[in-house]
View 1: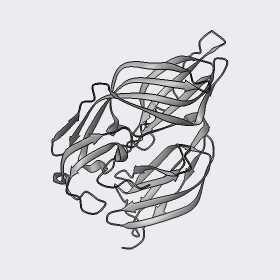
View 2: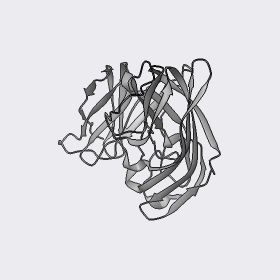
View 3: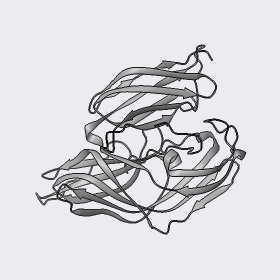
Length: 282
């Protein structure tokens, strides 16, 4: 499933912590700690100054159907600041030992500021609640420390109004309003995943900025693969984190440099796979 320009940004809300944070464990043998992290890969980022999203509640569901609250309050995160593998801290919480295979997330207000300083607000008053599968499931036992990653796909979450040229926004002025906001998340046990990173260049060796880079897999468990994407930075670099072990097809799409597909990209747990791509001639 590719992110269209009408959807605009893909915001990979991949949990709440910046790389490898550690903490002491609870002394109770039946309790463990979990760090929740958030990441984002908005697209096209060149037209966005900020995406401020208020998280008001996060609950985890165990395999017996019981919910435990790991966060409640108001945490406003500018998700546009967290791209290509960086994550924002949301909370660190103590939870009972067990296996957690789903999460329920409540989102409050969302405010998007474009580069022309236009601001689009969506006030949910804490009323938007969505449930997502955690896959791989989060498992914590005997005081272990877990890392939970949430990825929100803003491309499928935000419905902008405007006139768009094909699958690309050519100018920030084409975005005329915000029609709706329906959060679309994925969630994984970050310690059971790997990542893909690399650099995208043109045939002359120049960095290709703002190219869309994506893979797809069935993270909802419904048999249908869905996209996980990011964009290249100004230097052409990219990283997609939180990918379960397996083989992926990497797709790169640039407005000015064409498209390219790289097959059989292997991902291993707690390992990064490097893929450097040269785009074809248009």
